[in-house]
Image (cartoon, rainbow, N blue to C red):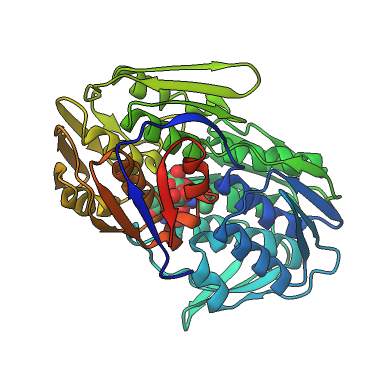
Length: 420
Ligand code: EPZ
């Protein structure tokens, strides 16, 4: 798996239909949430991604039954016993910190290895830890482990987040659903994945309101029962495939998408000259003409602003748009690592701190490139589809964390791409 590569011969128009898989960033907190449920949970539209496999391994490791039947993952946490997530499993997946709130909420204590820094820069969890401590958790960090316990149980309280952190909002919700009393989160994250998590927990008997706004209220309940739930579609995978169509002057139907979750992405692609509209139940259509125009400055922001996860794939499209594109990455410190690789393909990009300035060029040329994070790897795929000649992309393990067999999806719409 590790040393697989994608071989792409560029210049082919993307034409056809891609079914959008379930959202990775919804499925991960949902799997963590099943730890809280004293019964069977059925999660439909669970994407086949290595991060999801890693989350299922963590569940099994702590005694939660977890099996996959096609696109559905079934769990049962009646017999949950373990409360330690070893370093091997924590390292496999950055966002395993989202298990903290659920394990504390259900078992009252847990021991997680400190999630290592990763490709996007340091991934601090200070907002998670201070919030959980304010609910009565005792957390000690030593020898690279987080020792967490709630000796007298977790108590609801009012928490104001200094930044609308997605993961911190999720961890607070997971810790609060079985806590004593009521928890109010102020300046909460508003991402659709948070709403999906709250909808699932409410189907299990939780009392959560305000999700989707910056103020979420959770009234603690004694127990949660099992339920059946369908994971929302992956808005970032949808945005990435739209970038593939835009970059190759193609046309694409994305089925099973949710256009409302793309409200800040679609106008940018339209401003570049793409035709985009949604039709029927969850279909989005995009077509792009021969030449693209550089968009106005793209600033990544918390939802509903432009998503940081779509920044890299869109920068690849802007490499061949007419004019100068300016990106401001306001969410992560170090999210331009794909830029050096795009420049190897003939892109003209200057990065200064959080700002990237892209001068459109006539065409990119295929090259050997290396993915060094998930969305940066996706950007290299977008660029290689548009480039003249063939490209070799290594580091596919990063890409497989967030895209279900990306080469099959793209081959199905005319791309010349294979995995070796
Ligand atoms: C989630 O990460 C997503 N991951 C990320 O997607 C996404 O980019 C991010 O939200 C923003 O939308 C999952 O949902 C699994 P944050 P998360 O907490 O929760 C800082 C992808 O490609 N921060 O909102 O880690 C942090 O350093 C991934 O699918 C603190 O300073 O994002 C970052 O700069 C990448 N202290 C910013 O906030 C904290 O305690 C946003 O982080 C927590 C975060």
